[in-house]
Length: 471
Ligand SMILES: *Cc1c(COP(=O)(O)O)cnc(C)c1O
Image (tube, rainbow, N blue to C red; front, side):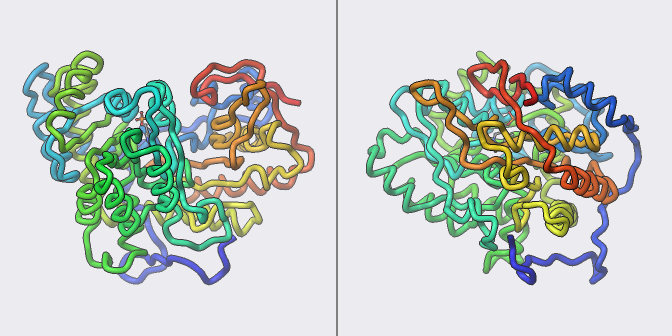
């Protein structure tokens, strides 16, 4: 764990200790409160996979921060202003202008979400025999790459796996590993290098500008495309501002722009830092690659001025992307993640610290040390958090990343994590205090917890639909 006294302290507004939510409530959505007895039955009916749960049966939904944030009054106003023209919508002009100004890239392709941008780009850059190297491939990224026949290799720094390390940029790529992969496979076999900022599957940990610069230099030397998976580039920029020398007085937009400047392409799920419920884009510098991608965009997503989006979505993205870089918002955002991580740490729950941007990661393997990886301890914890308090979380362990070897024997993931993703501007501090209390109760009953067995699974992205049985 992080030694006491090591912190990246952030203070409240004007020297106050309390960091407040920098918004007030205008419209409310009721939460339906359920009992433990009800939830036991709901989860059994969902085959112990919370992805299969009806959201009305969830009290606090920390399944994902993707598309679950609250839109602002300005975004809702934009929804009314959305122009639904098939071609040449002014809403597209606005989105193109904001995305172009945030990324500094020339060619912007709207898509219905991040994975559509991934599919378009990686079918161009991938194919059998190709290798992709990322700090950590997100699950849809890996799936889209492997679907083309290429291989996805993770190369994150060792500190990423060390919960005791207070290293400020645990999302960094291991540049030595990158160099040796490039020389062993040959640069012409590398489809792309992908920097995921922040590193979602690696704890939402940030990537430093220094690291991005080193990765970019290697890519430029070998003429390998560098892709920024920029879903959480605003949160990443805020961490750089707090922790990396030389950026204290830069704005987060300036920091992000500098990082985009190191890359050749960017993929964004606007459902994250652009704070919308649906949307994404692909941004490119190279004209011929943009032309090839545009062909696929038109065939599979829609015409170039809407991709897979409605005009109202594009308005909301343009406004949301700007709001996502607001530093009072980012200050509160990072503080709330940290608040939950610190609460859990105080309770003796093994949690990754310093906390990342969008989520708190609990070491489910250590929490349920008596359940072996083959019995999915992190998935068991996910189930128990739901039954105990109606808190929905997600496993990032052997359910998500486990594989089978040539003989069909299961190969566990490196780690058994439970992710508590925080939707943007959605829950208050008391909601997070409740989550901590639920953890305390689960911890209290920990010895009686049992593992799970998979009874049915699909070939790709099995965590979404697999069915389990309690042992
Ligand atoms: C969410 C996400 C994606 C995929 O985006 P969708 O909008 O869910 O399709 C890709 N990469 C990262 C890092 C993500 O967090």
